[in-house]
Image 1 (cartoon, rainbow, N blue to C red):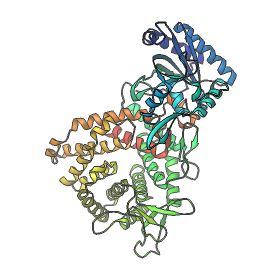
Image 2 (cartoon, one colour):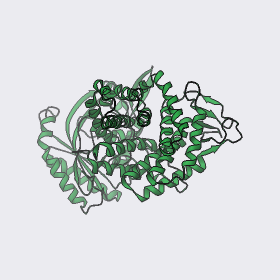
Image 3 (cartoon, one colour):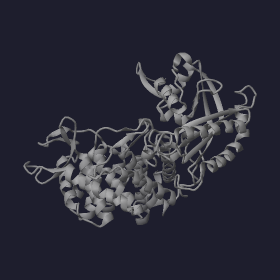
Image 4 (cartoon, one colour):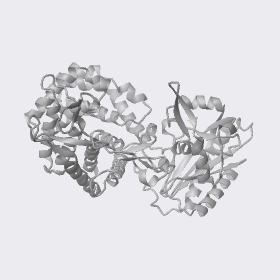
Length: 574
């Protein structure tokens, strides 16, 4: 399946509305049946039309009538007037018809939403029973109408009246001063919706965690290739002429994510190289090369004056107030980017830098027990923090394996084997770390020993149920599952320790993978989702984290890209 190119068709607004009108009219009977009891056995129809030029937040009009025809006409007439008043040319139009309505006292509504994870409230809201003031679910979330406060240690939700009043003025041109004192009851509702991108009309999901995004019949190779291409192009657009990324956006109000993280710079470049391996996009190649040059010139230092470090190289994380530190994970991410570049582009330019960084990783390692410290001070390389983020350990070991795959230097393999003695004896599989799954798979290629296979299987087995039920789109889960899948395939191909699979649920692994592949689409800014945010053109086709204020940061995209690339190469195109 392919995703139509948004807004590039010849279909004009009138024809788009006509097609959407037919879809909404077909739902009229079901809508009336479901809402009949709420409107006291009277037929009542409520239609919303949302429209955007992709550059600015969608405007929304509403029509209410005793027939679906009158409700549609009212919403469409208001839309046409609004289009003229604000002088925009809509390229995306979405139509919704209300199906189910529930009423709550204001206190019970607050109690209800307080039991729901932030930004996971997935219903529309009406502030009166006639729907005079009503907002679609997407308007509620994209404008932060609900927020969370800490009340006596409990999560307590509240309505953000400032945001609601501001939105009413922007969308309707109405100056209001609504607050809690004016609200007796709140009515939640669901809709059936359709979206037109100027080329094609899509049925949208209307229940569960998929609400508001298009139905997709099959997550096949063409679909995945297009998603990888679009999301990696989003990353390419974030790279400036110096090679530095725009770090990310809080999408509701188009606020730039503050700060910078050179570790995520490196790991994002790594994922872009994975994407290039799929699509050979020249624009992507140029951005990759600029980002690697920035990493090499601005991010890496040697400390030759340090007796023990010698010519080891380290990635320097610049903090506030002229402070700096060295993260184990940053050295690892840089090696992953440099070695992946060498493999994909058949270019060893960055391998000497990767080898110096690998020596840096060995500097982090305790030569006795194989463990790593996590953070060093600059410039004396003293230990700043022994432990910070558990994922640094697996990332470092994985990076050494990727370098070993290129230069076959036994120092790297010996360091990884020593590290795994520590990981195994300390039950690191309990952390569900995707880097450790990647690494144990790479390690067993060269050291096909039961202990490494057992570690990988345990690492996946402990999270299979979690992967199937988790509501967030947490993308590293797919990466972990795919590493285990690849290892199992190698075991089968090489007839290697197959008895170890007897106690592992391979079917559940596949189910979890397929579930995550589909579920992670709920973290993608499809046009029908992006249109409700302040600057849709900036974020469309990027991946976001719903419970972090719909943040789209470079690493939110990199992990999705890496997981989908692995799935595409190893399952979808197998």
